[in-house]
Image 1 (cartoon, helix red, strand yellow):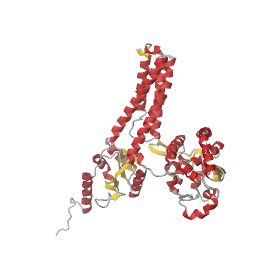
Image 2: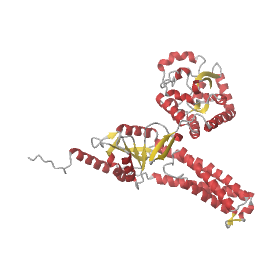
Image 3: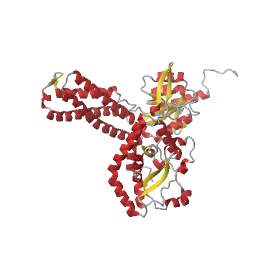
Image 4: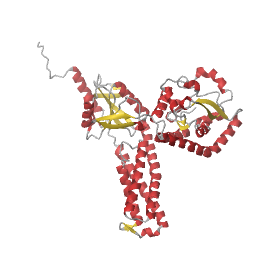
Amino acid sequence: MSDHVDSSAPTVQTESRLNREAFYSRSFRPPAAAWEPRYRQWIILADFVATIVVVVVVGAIMEMRHPHWGVTPLFGLPVLVTLELLTVGAVMLAFGLSRVWHPVVLGQGPEEFGRLGKGLFASIVALNAALLAAGSPAGARLWVFVVVPAIAALVFPQRYLARRWLHRRRRQGRCLLPVLATGTPESISDLIDRTTKASHVGWRVAAACTVDGGTDKKAEIDGVPVVGRFSDVAEHVKRGGYRIVAVTPDRYWTPERLRRLAWDLEGTGTEMVIAPRLMEVAGPRLHISGVLGMPLLRVSEPAFTGFSRLVKSAVDRVGSLLLLILLSPLMLLTALAIKIDSRGPVLFKQQRIGKDGVPFTVLKFRTMVPEAERMRADLIEVNEGAGLLFKLRRDPRVTRVGRILRRYSIDELPQLFNVLGGSMSLVGPRPPLPEESAKYAPSVRRRLLVKPGMTGLWQVSGRSELSWEESVRLDLRYVEDWSLALDLMILWKTLRAVIGGEGAY
């Protein structure tokens, strides 16, 4: 028998890999995201129809106030007709140039609405420039500042309702973008977990590629099949219909290999997303710039002072004052209900730790019996709170009225006086008790770099349902990545969470 081995014959490992690839190429082909172009077409149509409706209605109103606009020429047409055509054209062109219909931003919330705002502002500038160049009457220029805000008043709620519909479908497992994940099994598993929890993002990890392609033809990571090696990514994309290739950390992915993968994906309609995972920083602190031909990710220092912080302080004071005026009837009724339901004071006062570790007295409507603090020691053993927090789902100290107040966070309303006085903010980390803050690790103490808030990221992300570690992570993310836009998003989500009573007890 010859000892020679035919090098052209496939080895057992090679044959196993080929069989596995053949198996998945036949039986596992994620469908292309056919819903995506249809959703985009409906959004474009809805924006167009909304613009037409507003222009026609505002035009009819203007015609009653300025009858001569129907006969006075402008660009060879009556003023009113010219204004209507220019407005529709300018708004739709500005939307297109601002990429408000780009698939990447549709359904993504802040970025989608931000691009809408930029598009509408651009249309105001373009319309004014056109009318000024044409020598239009002064009244015609005022048209712009009526019709464009009216379009915004219709388009923004329309987009919000469309986004809600899309998110509801995604929670049902529909309208998801198939993702091919690459990286270590641990990083892929983390991505699968994150996309499952945040279904509104619209990602579904449908397959994975690892450095060795798995060890058998049915290799899986958290139920997601491993379909091949890193070198097979582009080929699987071309025949698998994946919408996104998510590159998670692995030593294999050198700059040269990433560049080649990007080239291989050109023309496939597949987006490549790279997760650096060096540090959890996002939002306005991240900047990408090119230096000496190298793309650099710059991380700016957190903004704890400056003009934007002055704006935040002004919004806090004015907002809390307006809310106190608007909610005063509800607060009076709440005080009366507390007084009738049980003995004791209407307000509950407690020392908390504020910005820079300075203590202050927080105000709440009383939701417990007067001797609640004394009873706490007897309930420590049955504490259901996460980490340093003390929480009970069925706390025997809570009164009947108190359960309703806690359910809808009405007990927090007196904190508006704290905001008005400057010891708290409308949005910020949760104000801790002195005994909690005394046990903080150095990293957790960064929560105290900003004013505590009536609401924050952890409240709109699950409230009492979150683990201690997740609550801390969200508070630190707020401290690090704060922006006025983030505050507005949190305030809006707070209203929804409060109305639904999500995670409160």
